[in-house]
Length: 134
Image (cartoon, helix red, strand yellow):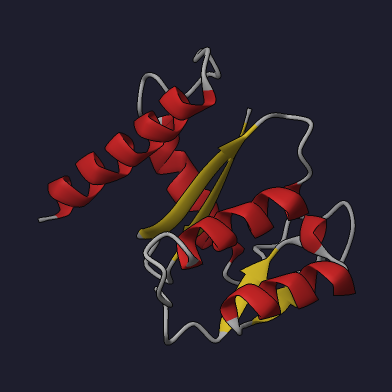
């Protein structure tokens, strides 16, 4: 199973989607944004201007799909040099959010049988993280 999350600049979650492993990252992100935008039949994120992604989300077709769904531009954070550790701009934010999820006992290893159970556990983990911040 793959977990796709959309977070803001502070790492707070806005969207989450769980797909099977045979779904590509691009298709999972499109599914996540389409479920987010059309869940309440209204535009959920009116101030969304830019979606930052890593190199796995390249392609004009993906950028056009995201623009049609959200109205936001897609920016790809690419690696500058190979075989060197460099902190990629803004990418650490989503990686930090995944690290928070890994602290949850049921999410650190893929042991759930159903996709809906994994999605529920992701939502509960983020709820507990946000409650602890209060």
